[in-house]
Structure formats: structure tokens, C-alpha cells
Image (cartoon, rainbow, N blue to C red; front, top):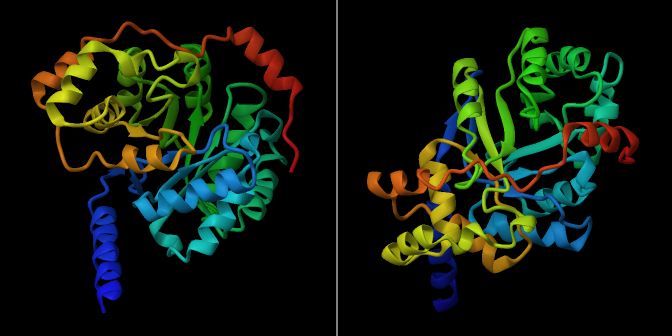
Length: 306
């Protein structure tokens, strides 16, 4: 009886946590969980599988992967084994540049569905601004119309205004989301303004700075002071800042403690003063700094296998 009661309390807490998850309404009316788990750099197999299962138990319902990460199969298997209703989960994946183009993109999405073991994908991105993205976008629009995909977006198309503009000009349906590096040290205000004009939601990768930051933002005195005031970690303060700014945010980790910690940000709010103090940290200091010409060279040479 005692074990049953404990299990019931735990289940109720889990349900309540999930019920509190904030959602964002995209420009096509689709609602997306605002906070998710990024699967970048998580190995195919146990690392991805166990991380997703831990995240589901903690209340996550949004998972961000990519063909290039080569862990879609583990994500799909973890979702299936968990028994979590499909319509409560948001699955994002990304196509690589060699999959852009007429006659390529729809077939690539079908292969992606096969790897994930799903009948539809909630969001598909063009992963990098390289290759035939203008023509490929036509097939992204067709995938959206067919119901195989619920939202379509662009990732890393902040390489230049001209690249962004060229895709927008070719699009009959504008992207629902643009995913970019964004955190307190690089708040990307230019792109905030551009996306606001186009009605495009911003989603943030490297929200805590990523590996190359070596924890720099997590040691920031302003953030640490705010964290102490709330009895939270620096990471929780940064994630909460993203949420209150209206961004979608996908911190990535395979550490079970960090997975649980990162979603434990729904029981407090930053004040207007604290939000302003974090906004004042912006210095457009990005951690991914590869020049675009090098990106074109590298991204064109390497192609992920199925």
C-alpha cells in the first residue's frame, strides 16, 4: 500500500510538471513545447536512448535531433519503449545539405521517418545554409501540406542577411522557426528583429554556451548573483531567461542530474530588473565562429549515411 501511494504521488507530480510546460504558437497555428532536450553530440545507442528516457520521466516532451547527429533511431526507440502518447511529444530533426533539392528532399524526409519509426515529424529543419535550399524548400512545403511534417524551419541561416533573404524570397510558406546560437553573451538582437518582422520563432542552440565556452557564461557574476537570490543554479537562471524572452530553448546533456535540473525552471520567475541585468550582458560573443566559406567547404564534403 505504501509503495502504491509513493508511486501515485510520483506519477501525479510528473503529470503536473508536464501540464505546466509552456508552449509557443507558431505562425501556422501549431503549438510547440518551449523547452526541449538537444541531442547534439549524444552517441547512437545507450547514451541517446537513456537520456531520452530520463528526460521523458522528468517531464520533457520536446526532443531535437538531426540526421547529422546519427542518433535518430535511438530517439525513436526510446519514445516507442516509453509508451508516451505520440501526440504529446514534439520531435524535431534536420536534413543535411545533400538532401536539399527537387527530387531529394521529400525522399529524405521519408527516410527520416523510417529512421525515427514515426508516421510524422513535428518539425524538420534545413540544417545548414549550403546547397540547393531554395529549390529544396518547395519540397519542404509539400511535406508540410501532406501532413508528414507539422512545421518547417531553417537552422543556421543567420550566416548572412543575403542567405536568409534568398530563402524567404523563394518561400511560398515562410519558415515557422529559425534555430541559431543564442545565449546571454550573444542575444542576436538583429535576428530577433528580423524574425519578428517575418513572424518566425527563434529557437536557441548552445543556450548555456556549449562546450567551446568552457562554462564561461555559467561563471558570470551577474548570473551567479541572481542564481543565489533564487536558490537556483546558473544554468537554471539562463534557461529561465530564454523562456521569459520568448525563445524556444534546447539545452543538451546526457547527464541525468543536469537533464532533471534543466527542466526544473518552472517554479520561479525572473523579475523585470533581473531580466534587464541579463540583457545587459549581451556582447554578441558567439562560440561557433567558423567562417562561412569554411562551412560551405566542410558541409559540402561530409554527408551522413542512413
